[in-house]
Length: 305
Ligand code: XMP
Image (cartoon, rainbow, N blue to C red; front, side):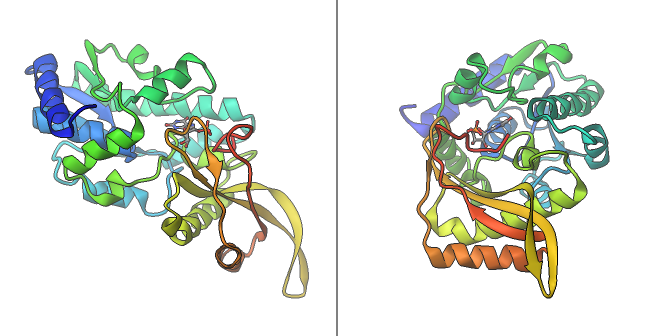
């Protein structure tokens, strides 16, 4: 991308030309990619675009409200409360790929319902360059690439950022005056907290992952990580008060990266790690242990599933 201003003007013109008088939809996840694509497309065609935010129940603390407020200027914004349906669909599912598949399918079903209601002819997507590369290599089944166009019969797909890297997307977001909570937002995977919980997804584990991730994001902001979060592993023995407890093991992960394809675990000072440990075990009675993940990518991936 040579110049952000020019890029934006060019893309707005292109989207107007492609969409014309028709209607369009976008699945808005609140991540920087889909948010920037939505802002660009909204700039181009206004309320002809319906941004659809599906609350899967797998989101971080306060995330749905942040999205509601940030995009309240878009009159056409639709927020779908699908928490119960996602949790029902995920009950008993433990295999990582099956989890992704179930979430992807449910997501498509939710999105399809709204897309059909709007009668939209165009699908806008926040696909960026690394998404396309990873999809081609089928490293994992990305639920936000490739699946949607096949189910709803769209006349065209609009992907204004398909050649950009994440740091370029952030530049565009800043130029479009998207709030910092969006432009500087850490990448958050489509399947949400589900890929940070090993084994079956339950309300209890979700609550632990959500609260612990909130602590980690707060405490590690000064390290300016590409991503920092907490994952819920298995259970281990601990002592709370006078009792031995069988509580969750929470893994803290903080990595730096340019595009998520490779990553380095960050070196965090001991005091900060201890503060994180104490906050997480303090606020969650059912967490017995906190560990710090020192593995780079490769050999690990950033997420846990
Ligand atoms: P991994 O875990 O494969 O992740 O090292 C690389 C980057 O991709 C994000 N990620 C996803 N993003 N849908 C997404 O939109 C997904 O299914 C998905 N899985 C991983 C991950 O957060 C990291 O930034």
